[in-house]
Figure 1: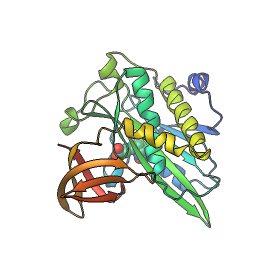
Figure 2: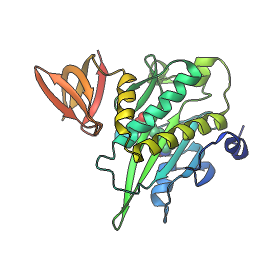
Figure 3: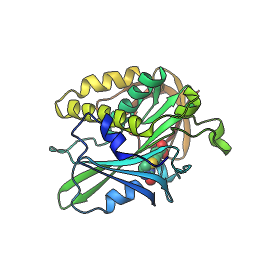
Figure 4: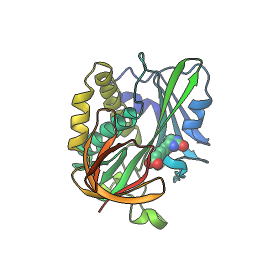
Length: 256
Ligand code: BTN
């Protein structure tokens, strides 16, 4: 079933979304917003399928047409954000809250993967573009909704709402619930309530207080993840030394 915009608007309870466009096929919803001139906050682009869907760290994001949610939205903060990476943590928190409400389960793998048990259900790609001095953020999100099965390595590492609930879910309602949560969390961020959000994030972050292995500058190390700093970095104790790393510094992180 193609994405039904009026069904989406029926469930949308926020004015954050300022415009919506749904593509049958596009290279990448993130690319579309990046190339778009005069970007405003809350422009939402949805695709049934992407021909060049991108994941974090140059990975591909493949899809089965019309089964999942593939979308990007723009956000132009009124005041500049010191550590933009916090936006992807914020969206992971919003997505995880929706998973917990609908599935009774959900945890965040730092920085921004949302998982059910050991399997990823949603991922986030945060990008930015600057025109003169104006910085716009583009948040791209992929959620596995009605995909019945996964191929190759995803067979054991991915899951979907369908797999969790055993039934087809409304993508329109799910996207509206997600945007409602994201809008409310962005409002909290703008109203200086980031500490509240980072506390909730930490409570829901599976990576914390665990032995982990991680890769930095091509070297695999082991340590214990201790906490998340307000700037979104993770504090890791490795061989008695505590270091804070940002999401773009660590190429992989795994709970042992
Ligand atoms: C990740 O976990 O690696 C991030 C995946 C992000 C995928 C989404 S799908 C919609 C948007 N357009 C893209 O090309 N990527 C993001």
